[in-house]
Length: 346
Image (cartoon, rainbow, N blue to C red; front, side):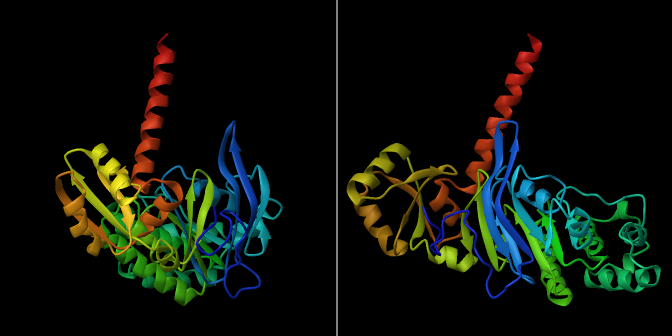
């Protein structure tokens, strides 16, 4: 299988127009006991690029980020961030990156200003630069007027913006954002991303983020789609979607299995049950719908047609949607937990 740009999934893909990448990863592997969480991952990110990892929870996105940020040691392979090796030059890597974790890490008992000053002290920002830099980053995220507010009283969106400002206090060359808007409402998420793009342009830094939100991945210049620890596709979002070449048609009927068989026998189409409905891809979906009603032979309750999305890209490479993949992995984790609890009672 190859990606839409002709590369083998997981193969090193040079970022456009950049001789010295901000992030360079070669054959990276991370194994926990017998579980291979990251499997032979290779890619590059250009300086100044907004790059994203898209995939379901458990795909290996956060594990990869943790290795790039020196929080985990790779089992094998190599990676450089801002030109420094993540194993041999850990301190240099840490000085040149900012990191916004998936889980909140602010001190809720301190003010916004106190949180930022503490971070500046930890990173050795010269005392004369702390105040002007704090004013600059808080202005950029719209929180200067709330600098003396206790963080525990802030909304979720305000805290996320403050965490991003904190990650910029020491002027990093690469800013890592691990699920930066998880748990936030769509309007707040869009607002956060407007701030991120403005920050990236003002600071001229590289932004590397992970997400399982389709709309969020659209903000990236390029994305790597991850599943089961591998990169299955890597390119610009529009290029990946254009490579699908078909519309997604979703139908609801009285008999899903009979519908899938009829689509295969009468139209030569392979369909799947996805998110509770029969889904398949076909060129010119809207023109196909009248023929569907006339020839399917199974009563249709509802039908919808949509242009290719990143979820369609994910499905084309993995055979499932991101939501279904997350549900399957959640069920698997629950079964494992039940087995462990049952075993413990014996």
